[in-house]
Length: 47
Image 1 (cartoon, rainbow, N blue to C red):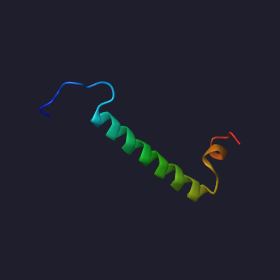
Image 2 (image 1 turned 180 degrees about the horizontal axis):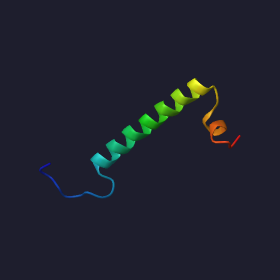
Image 3 (image 1 turned 45 degrees about the horizontal axis):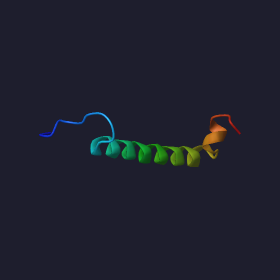
């Protein structure tokens, strides 16, 4: 944490965190679909 300049915007830390959270959300969505037998849109009542 020596370089404490850019804390807002498109930083490497922000992009890595965003990618990891997106991967986690995708895995949770697929696991939920497998457990319930319904798609994500059906679970939300959109289909």
